[in-house]
Image (cartoon, rainbow, N blue to C red; front, side, top):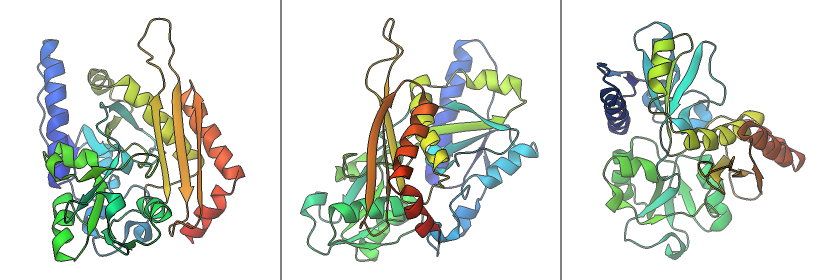
Length: 311
């Protein structure tokens, strides 16, 4: 299994392997897993904001190349890093059960987000977070910070910041949940597409591996993330543009005779928070739902906002 080399990536990979080993053992399958750490472009470039480097595939391309070349059989990704369109010959064989999808605030003195002082300095590397935080609190001074979770937490003190904003799921998986000051509700800050979910990618012609990955695939997470990714795909978005989406079931598809309905909320905003487009829609087909919601925002000018961001 290929993985990035950060502590979070290695931890997530270990958790995915545990799930796979358990599923295999329950079925009497003798399958063994080993990890191969791979450095990606996004890991190497730490002194430039991701939006300026180029947002598509920064944390996955080298892993995908290793799949093509047979160096690895499967790759584990944070779903929010995976572009909406995969390269030919590769597929997502499994989507693991989603952790908390929300963003969270870690403040220096324990104050919640609403009680941060006027002009507070907040660190984030995300245009998506920046535009929503500025829309909610125009007074904030947002500062770009890059690096792994632990280095961003250290910058809370070393860079003189009042707060940093990170994905809650990463902190939870690292066992650092106690560092979270507050989880931001999605009506304040919509998460990134796929945030909180892990994806396992493999070669499309590797039938044995595809059958194995079915054992750990979570269908509900797969469907909600598919709606978000369809929204992303229609807007031709990368993971580093001011775009967010979150889907959840409004009723349980597992209940008898119930196909389930998904509510998808999406947003596109100017990085400075001066303009924000946000809508919700409900539907049963994830791909159709995501596409329809994106087209609604396009009719309201989403393409113009994204074109300005892309320059």
